[in-house]
Image (cartoon, rainbow, N blue to C red; front, side, top):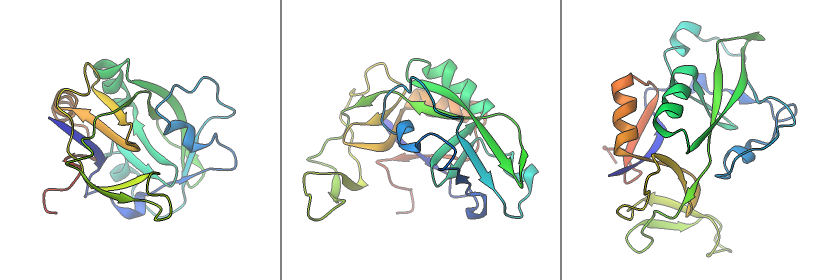
Length: 190
């Protein structure tokens, strides 16, 4: 079984970070499903809201307007479970200008065709471009399409991160916090 990796419902909206678009590499390079060879600068994430740093540190999967970033714990798990599927890139994370702990971008480096387009539910993201990007409301995955990959990006929707049952179980066993594994890309209550 495959799952869409997402942020957990318990992740507070006030913990959304801002990606420093002006002084960081384009965040799109981390969503292409390809290895990033050379960075023009280190990725930087900032938050200047009143938050509990201790509570924030409970999360291993964090959100920004430039995508996701992960804790050292989650980075190590990714390398151990899916080392060929991910590139770990160090990121600078600041709260009120103070750098905190070790954080990384988990750049998923493989695009795999895994979505059964006949059985999935989607619509064109841009009405005038029906063959362009899609907005999925339900995924049906092609059985065994991930092959030996544990984590990858869907070729049909590159912003979608798909994980194997093994990857999900490793995250649960390791106590990775802040992640949700959505069967068919939808939450249980939808």
